[in-house]
Structure formats: structure tokens, C-alpha cells
Image (cartoon, helix red, strand yellow):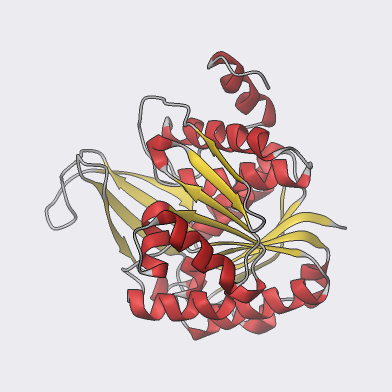
Length: 318
């Protein structure tokens, strides 16, 4: 079986504070568990949009692990490379929102089943069958084993002339910014498509000038940089100098967590279908907007048609 997209990394469940500005330091109500994990959100959304997908990861022998595997199966993700570890528990994350939109996370990733992803879990033959390998930076930051697993997967993909995409997904709860810069700089030479938030771009390059930051990244290797700008839409820049900007499709915000990962999936969908960049950005912005309007990090669009319908409702020609 061939795949359009394969990813690897953390599989976790997420619990979300019901009320804003109530941090984890005080008792209060959460909703969840919701299936989550940055690379898992992207790969599940790819499957929902109609792509052939697979995932490499580890869950615990518990209800949360079962939930994640069953969700993948229901949405069409191949789970043959997800290992169940009987000696550890499935990863968890707790998120609280502030009124300004910022978030506060508590993770147990470094002590979870996800942290037991090993290079030997990465099957070269499996990776070679994917047109795109998608990497989430958060997987790099868990420990040296998960990082080495990603590096092995990238090496295999490049040896087979396949495309590699990366979302830095900076998580200071997992690693220092200095060490994150080192890790990203090391693998950037093998990255074809970089999905990056505007604040992440500044943090990685240590410059707030977006043009200088972008061209600094191009010197490191990627040939296409896609900047996610939240309410201000998105921007794609090629290493040949082409720059395309697209405004966001605004909706009532319910839960923005996971929107960037959903955006990545929708962009990958359009890219694999050889769409023009403008069309891809409209589609990705719309998919992310659907996610923002729903509670739960993996609860983005359920189908390609749902994304197109929102685009048409907002008055775009698609």
C-alpha cells in the first residue's frame, strides 16, 4: 500500500479548562479527554480530507490509547505501526486559555508512552511508501529517542526523493528555545516545506523582520515557507521570490488549539493535488477556521466538502 502522507510522534489526549483565565494552579472544571498530539492532528485531518495516511507512534495499554487508535481507524488512518506499550501510560496534556488568546499547557509527554518511540519503530519500507513525510517539532523536543526517530525518518524520506514538511511547533514546556534552535537548524537542510507561526519564525531566527527571517530560513534549506498568522491569515513564500498572502476566514472562536495542525493538513492536500498556491491557502485557511469553531484539538473539518462549503459561504470563488 502506498501513502500520500505519513507522520510519526506523540499521541495524547487533551483536557481543556471550561473557563478562560482559570489556570491549572487552582481547582476547576475541564472538558475532555479529546484525541490530540500535533502530528496526530495533522495526519487525522489529512485522512478526513481524503488522503491515504499512516502513523508511527506509541500509546499505553489504557482507555486513552484505545480511544486514539479507534479514532484513527474511524477516519481511515493506517494504525499498523502504532505500538502499544504495556509499561507506560498514554500521553496527556492540560490546556488553559487566557482572555488574550494565549495558552498554558501542562504535559506528561516526557514520562508517557509517546516518549518510548524509538528509531527501531521507524520502518524504512513504510516511510519510503509516502509522498510526504510530515514532522512536528514537538516530537523532537520529547527526548533523544523521539528526536533520533524523526531524524531517521527524514533520512529515509530524502533517500527516496520524497517530500519532507516540518512544523516547528515550539513548546517551551518541553525544551529551551536555545536547544530548540539547535535541533531545528540541524534538520532544516532536509526540509522542503516549512509551516511556521509568525512568532515562531522570529524565535527561530532571532529577528522580528519577517523578510529577513524568511530569507535566513531559505539559506538553511527549505524551498517553501508557509507562515501562519492567525486572524491575519497566511503567507506563502517560495525560494524563487514568489510571495502570496491570503486573508483568514473569520469565525466565532471556540477552541483554537490544533488549528495550525489542521492548516498543515489542508495545505498538504492542496499541494499534493498540484493546486496553485492561492487556492491552497484559501483551502487551508478555511479548514483552520472550521477547527477554531469547535472544541477539541482534532475536531476540524470532517470532509473536503465541508471545507469547500465554508469557502463558498464566505463569498470566495473556488
